[in-house]
Image (cartoon, rainbow, N blue to C red; front, top):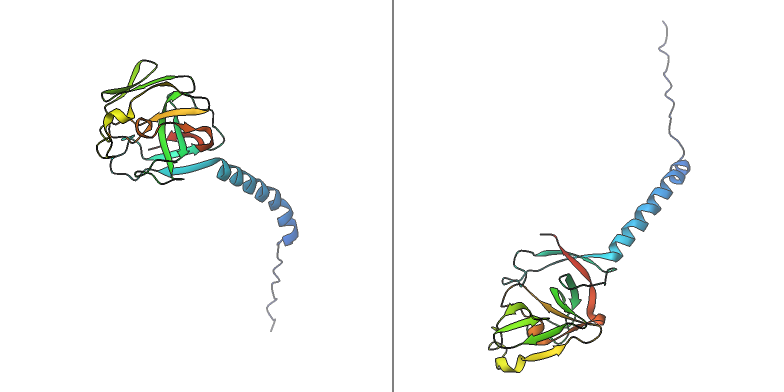
Length: 176
């Protein structure tokens, strides 16, 4: 009786070293791109019930783009903004005014270069200060921004003044 022949299977595996040599450049590229994106961009959300930018709540912040123009969304770190924001908290608002713009604030309205930006000072009472204490008629100093929201209840520059270059994180883009 004939014995069945053993079938010998040959492995077509390549040595791990060759695989690593081919995969290493791709892995390095992926890590470099991830590091760059991770360093450059932040994603932030606004979980407040009454948002100052009511139709948006998720933002992409480009930390490399600090070239802010009037009308841009800007992310910055809070300073002197108690009781609403803790120092260091990241906030996104609209840059309504930039260096050299003329600001006027009274109990009825806020204007930048004569254009109405927002009406009233509804938070003055909550802050336990008379509306007259927020009155301004001045020019935005160098390296400063005047920020506001879209709603009259926005806690913004009308109440705490300017945001300066050292507070700026970067330009923000509303995602949702």
